[in-house]
Image (cartoon, rainbow, N blue to C red):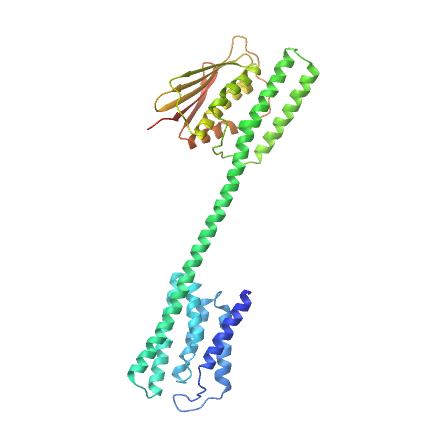
Length: 371
């Protein structure tokens, strides 16, 4: 059912209730008689304002409250349905400050009871009961409206939270894709590119084929970096590879022409997968940066130092005595260290980097063991 149809049904119901419960008496308190068409026309005209009860609840409530005061002039004409609907509407569609005006419905309700008591010869107890019933109906309308308002606000807040979570999930998926493109595919292609360049430089193999390999890898690298520019720059923690994959990583770096020395001191502890991945990515970033930016002939030392509470990772490169110029590679946009720093932060680690003894040092510390 559409909202417009529901509003029309509410208006029709309010008109029907107020006209059906009116006994047709047309005498004013002064004894004069009204024409029959006047109450009918006035009820329809005023109750039509209920169509705007959601957009202008205060104005509609004021109109209905004023109309209900007609009982002071015609005691047996006591329209109440429209007033109750308007009381509900102002409570359900207004802020707390505006909704409080709904309690003014007590004024026309008491006026109706007063007019009836002055016109009808009835026992005091019966009139008191009628007054209580009218006030209870008004209070119920207002309280129900407020409950609907509060539930609606909570529902909207819940929906907004769900929208936020969906947006965040989508954002994190893009972050994960950007991270893995950089940490996985981009670094691996960089190594392949350097292998081809090194082989061509030493004239081993078919120079034309190696040149094509290098050219293809370079284009792939540039395309990946272009894709990364479309991704968010804030990284998130990823999954896999683990510490067990370090030997393969270092072997690949050696095949690319980098002299790598790996040392591990202390007793290796069990780490969560996310922490193992952070360690792997830290070493991969340091080794890849050495391959990309350090002069040819640079030596790279990778070390893991374990204590009962901390793991220290260090990747230090030292230029050799006959170091050549660094290879010319596509720019990466500075994502690597920023992403690594954030990845380490998510597992409680910190990152340090800077020049050292003519080379470069990348170091990280991670909490391990029971603390």
